[in-house]
Length: 270
Image 1: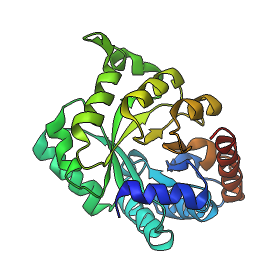
Image 2: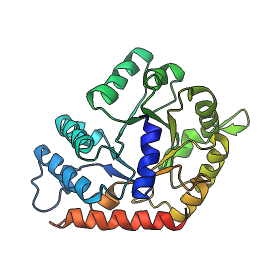
Image 3: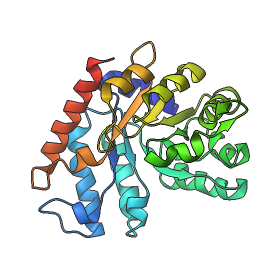
C-alpha cells in the first residue's frame, strides 16, 4: 500500500486531519519521567496510546532524537506504531537535501533504517537530490514549499520570472517530480493566502501543515484555504501544544484532550 493510500484510509477511519508531532524535549518531560534519553520512548508510547484513534499520522522530528543520541528510541517509537497501530502512517521529519550520492544514503536512512512511510526533504538542490527518495514509489516524499516560520519570506517569496519562488517549487513538484504520485508539500498554517494559491497550482496533492499549534496558525483559515473538494488534503501538525499540554502525571490524558479539541475544531470547517 502506498503512503497516499494509507493516509486516505487514516483520514477516513479516524475522521481526522490531525498529525501529532513527536518532538520529545528532555528538558520538558513531565513529572514521573526522568530527563534522560531512555525515557523518550516511554513518553512517546504514552502519547501514541492516548491519541492513536484521533490522528491521521505521527511525525517524529529526528533532531530531538539525534541531539541526545537517542536514535534507538526513534527506531523503537516507529516500530511501536507499526506494530500496534499499523494503519497510522509515520512521517520522518528530517528535511534532508544533498547531492545525489548522499541523498541516496539519507533515503536508505529514512525508508530502510527507520522504516518511515514518508520523509520531509528540501527541494532547493534540485531533482537529483530528490530522485533517490522519489524512487521509493510506495513512500511519501514531502517537499518544503512555503514553510511556517517567520523568516520563510527571505527566500521563498523571492520573485523568479514574475512569480514567487514557492509557486515555482509547487509547480515543479506537481508537474515534473510527481511521476509516481508520491509527492506532498509542506505548506505552513501561518500563510493561508499562499496556501490557497498553492492549492490552485497542485490540485489534490496533500499538504503537511505545520504551525497550527504553538506557532499560532488560524485553523479556520488554513482549512478553508487548503482542503480539497472532499474535505481532506491536509495533514495538520501540532507538536508542542499536544505533547506538553500538561507537565504533570496526567500528560497523556491532557495530550488526548488537546488532540480531540484540534480534530473537532478542524472538522467544523471541512
